[in-house]
Length: 403
Length: 145
Image (cartoon, rainbow over all chains, first blue to last red; front, side, top):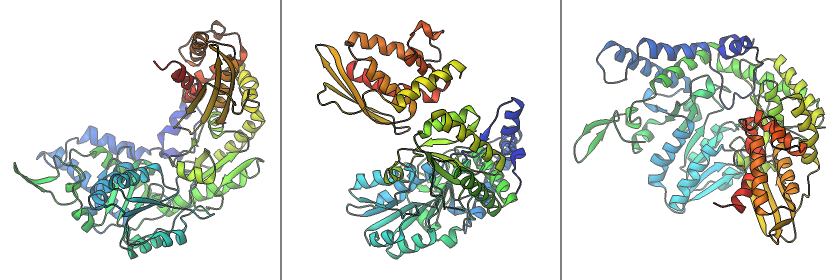
């Protein structure tokens, strides 16, 4: 697949200004294609109104587009019904909502919640805090030497006290992928619910929540070419119906009396207040963009770039690639002997190359690997081999600068 | 970065990062200062021994990038012999060096190239928290108000 750089205006704009911009930080957030920017602008400039209430034409059109966006998401993740698709402000928001509205009301002292050692802090802290609040146990499943969730350890830990299992599908630090289907099956066998953090999965493989059989799945729009401030919580209909409302307010009610309130049906029940309409429409456009290329094609492109990077960086002495064998990933972390990741990132930034250095919000993972920080590269549809060659040259310069 | 700063970065910051001043614990100390940057995970323990109101010994342990390590090393070296009032002035001057809106030319602040090198942080605002990490922790400990 050719690089799709021309669809992303930031690159042409940077060039116009004479600035180099090589973006290897898509796991943090992807750049935005023109089609997504246009969809948001068209809404604000062409048919702006609130959704769900107005009887005039922009309100009707806005409501239609908002509903269409939800249906695009439903199709994107393979949900049975659009009722199972809840808009949130992002993955973090979605996880907090499940922890608060699904887990907390039923969690009891001595219950157990499982997470893995590779979780992003956003899929770790909410569960940890829920456990602390109720005197429950948070268990952290270790990883194998291949840096994926140790299924034997998971199996050994699962028991009838485990109420919830929250796991990421793909490590945002290493790019390694967990076998979600098996994890869900094992967890369900002891009656535990499973939430999948799919933040890094959406462009890695076609998601099918029915095949995965997970109870909840969440991702953020901004990691798949959509806007910030909008994300998705997929939940099985029965569970979303059983859960207490995520928050209370306008738009999520049926009947309000002084003494009691009847709540609206799904999905409105869990979406109090005026939603992020532009965000949802932008996400819809982003999904159109992804579907027009195909998730499999994108994943193949990214994996090929990763393989090429492994090949080139292995030629530099002192570079230590982490989880080098996670071949079909779009994320590659590394360290360089004697040079701190932040120093590497600063020098690359000087050359217009954007990477991320730090713990990537996965302190437990890095602690387990004995590393305070890594440099993380992550690839997307606007990257190409030439950029990776430039990266290699820059790293060689850094090495001689610090050497 | 200007060529001069680049040179200074190379000669001074890397010198201290690779061969830091007095790295290790002190056996006797009056202050143990923990400097931790939660954003990047850099962390240093700064040991200071103040006798008769003057710093007679300083050392540090810990881990961080070249800038944070060198700045901790330079701090430990330069506060030797100083009393609290002198430290206050010294730290304030150093923070001016890091400030993008601070005085120009840098010679107005210091002629010491070892310190001047950190003005490189003026051009990397996101690295400011590396350059001032130990320094702000020291201020918090010695001047809690």
